[in-house]
Amino acid sequence: MYNHSPMTQRESEGAIKANTSLEDDINDFNKDMHDLYNIGFSKETLSASQLKDIVKAKGRFVLQSLSTNPYYNLALENYMFTNTPKTKKGFDSCRLLFYINNKCAVIGKNQNLWQEVDLAQLKSKNFELLRRFSGGGTVLHDLGNVNYSFLTSRDKFDTKFFNKKVIGWLNSSDPELKLELNDRGDIVQNGFKVSGSAYKIAGGKAYHHATMLLNANLEQFSGLLEPSFPSNMEWESSGVQSVKSKIKNVGTISPGQFIGLVSERFQKSFKVDKNIPIYACDESTTINDEIKDAMKSLQSDNWKYFSGPKFSIKLKDKNLKIQVVKGMVYECNRKKLIGLEFNDFLENIDSYT
Ligand SMILES: Nc1ncnc2c1ncn2[C@@H]1O[C@H](COP(=O)(O)OP(=O)(O)OP(=O)(O)O)[C@@H](O)[C@H]1O
Image 1 (cartoon, helix red, strand yellow):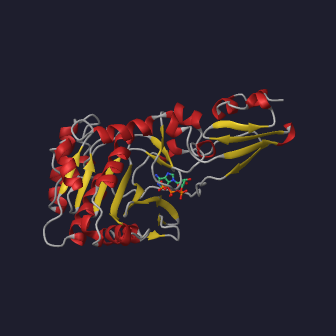
Image 2 (cartoon, rainbow, N blue to C red):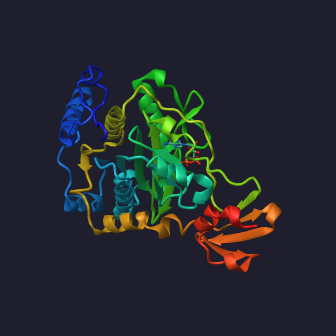
């Protein structure tokens, strides 16, 4: 289970046991947040109706999900995005969401999953596969990676705006961090990527969500985004291909510290008249039909495997050409393969002579 406490004396003394209860974690976290920043996340999680009230009303807030279920977290983000009122006044209803996911690979909405991930390795290492609702490339998550999502109005949206803030806040807390923004809007440290971003714009609103590698198990990530194919196979894909980057952990800041610091700076930076509240939510108390429906969509094979861009492949020396639409062989110069799931085709690829 994710330890929500920032690095503390207690932690360095090794007094935090691996299997502390969630309640202990939250109590520790609140105490540390209070000591460090004079803020705290309520250990009370929102009820479904409280969530609805705060999301649908105008106003700014911070929300931290205490659930590490990636399906819940992506569905929650989608719920917040869809139900935040449209505002003409820029940042009036800007919101900041934090979540941390169990091991998973998250591909962009318009990506060809077979080119992006090694499905067999994901399975053997117990990584879930998710196709998110936003664009962008494929990233890996585990409990050492914090996701933040900044929601704002369409007119105030700028892909680099929030990461510039995050970089400023983190570097001013520790100049040794030396975080920088690259041309693509990613956050880098010593030339290595520590955070990747994706965006969604719809209905007059926009969100920028991003990863932050703090103490992820990068060894486990190795090879998961490097699927292998026969050397005679050629791809022609209309989808978005990930831009491979060398990654690293920030290392000196824990997930709890990151969330605490960014929340506190967000509260200060975006405050107008009243204080910006900080809420917590989790899957058992803060759920409704809309979130459940989005979770079902995210979990469905239809969304994961049978959506995404169309593409073609050629097996050069075998004079075999197929076109794949929604995960199925749609056209092929061998009629009997038409209608086959692409996954099945790949699994039996050696048998096509
Ligand atoms: N948790 C992570 N955080 C940052 N970069 C990652 C992470 N996991 C993998 N990566 C690297 O990011 C590359 C994908 O980057 P790309 O720019 O295509 O997508 P992205 O838009 O940054 O991702 P996202 O849209 O989810 O933020 C991967 O090939 C890998 O090198």
